[in-house]
Length: 256
Image (tube, rainbow, N blue to C red; front, side):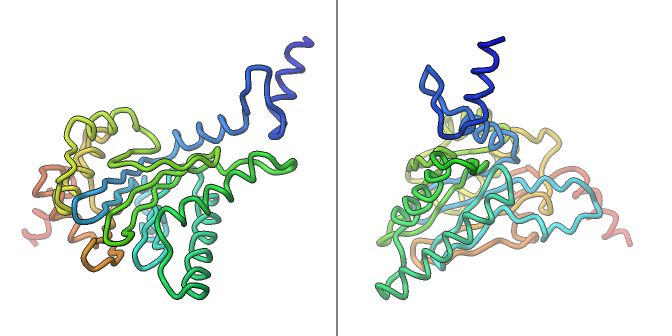
């Protein structure tokens, strides 16, 4: 009984390390990320791609209300996995940080600098009593000095830079696919197809344009662009990933 009581004490206290050096609340936050719908980031030769699974729970839900891809600045996009409400707080922080940098230094913020500012903010919530860690991970992709950059944030406040990464539900299967098929000289358009094919690894029934989100940041223009459903559908068709329902509905429309 005494051992169980001690275990519960470590469980509840964000500021208390367990005897084996663990912070249980941070680990629970990571579990929240694993249960969230998948997000994928790929660093291409000429830009960065972000792809997310929106996981529309009902046909009555407005797809535009499911926000998993965000514009942090003209040259930076962010995708999330985990608690959406926690993600919105961090996105607001990122946008303020980016604007403060523009006002203070009259230049766009670097992707690495923004990531580290966000993770510093996240880390504070792992050592302050009366608060809990953010139950979300972010993929931060953008252009810095003409070069594509892609970072991940962890609920512990640790930043890591990646060439290609999946977070959220089905991460292991998607990541294995990326490791097997990624090359550093991949073009931006091919990277979109690669990310969609990776997401298709956990969707045997295929993908629908309404159920996913895609955004790119091009190295030449350094601009964040979110693709429309029609553009996404073209990528799905060209990569043979379009769900059968979408194909049937198109046939019905043409018959009308």
